[in-house]
Length: 167
Image (cartoon, rainbow, N blue to C red; front, side, top):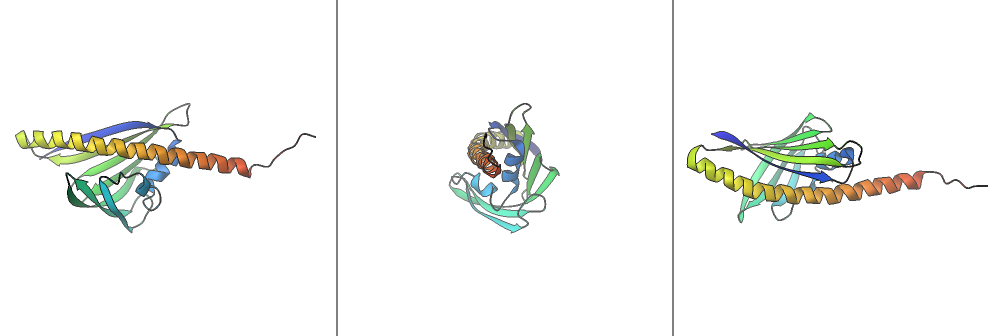
């Protein structure tokens, strides 16, 4: 067996802290960014935000349901979050600030065990085709949720500022 990596990156139109908070919150953030076409029944077994959270969910792959259970870690809190699954797959969420903007780049990457030889070549091809579609759909949802939350946060901050009148 060897390891194969599949990645997808997208610019998110929201600040990195807002975006990372959504990814790390498995009770009220992450459930909104997983594409329902491929994910069902996300459940938090323990924890709920960031490192130490344990999750399970169903993933729909070619019409079949695959059960998954994973543990969340934060090798670089605020920037890198990983989900390590019982089948040896590790999925990472990497949030990079974009200097001079209120945007960030988010990369989703999965490291998967694959066979060698022809079987491995077929596995790599399938994983690339399937997971990149899933990741880009997830990144699109993340962009929408992050923009909404960043706007709400900004509008909330404006409402709490005292009004001044010229006089």
